[in-house]
Length: 383
Image (tube, rainbow, N blue to C red; front, side):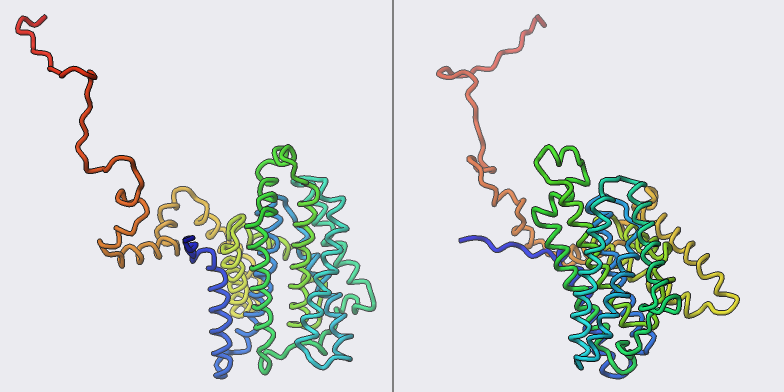
């Protein structure tokens, strides 16, 4: 009889976090105790998680540096929201309009990712970062000067904007989208394609020697990340109005990259926590610093990030970090609840290890086969 595979909580930790926030916020909203500001914050956290996880595919798992992720979000926000505005005149159901526009915005962003990736992924390191940075600046400048998208005044999305005071479905759909993105990304990473992607990151020459199509996988990851960024842009377009080109600047691409680096390269759980943390910090700074104090926002934000990065990476702080980490605290709780009788179920227990000889048997070895062994008598003469 085949043994059941042991379920690891760490494999589903991200789903538990997102699901708990989703269910908890919904219950609070139904009681009428969820402020409008926190409804807005939940939407911001949702699309920030999508952006961080998708960029982690490129930076963390593939090992390529991209600074144009906000450009793909810009494509989804403008073009996906514009399509949603046209659909809303025909379709009355706002949920259907949102889902269709998310798919359309993601596909359009993926198309731009394909166009940029074909020539850009032949470059490496700083050169690739410069090209992707230039793409982000070019895209937002083009939308800024197109009259159909409102030029510098921005695209007015008032007809499709969700009122977070009365309609709670936007952040619910946003978090449902987060769950779908996490499911797709985790299954991709754990598949043979994910192993090929990480092999390219570790050693591209060795990956080529093993027969991995490096160009295909680089382009594949770039397109998938652009698709998810486009979906996040559509959520942003339904969340705010107008959609302004200034939001998708170089600084926002750096902010998404900071989420990835702070959470840990190739760590999906880390990207979720870092995206939520940085979004919350920005929200609090914007809420409490106004007027003349608004100039201090970026200074305080930078200091907080410096402290977090040092705490996360300084070798001398590693023991403290290990003690306060969720994994260590969970292990302490688990060890405290463990009983002495539970050790018998341990796989490393010698009673369950198959051996040819019982461990409690007394063994004897004949040093001279066929003859009785007599120990040498000590020589009294000392010779």
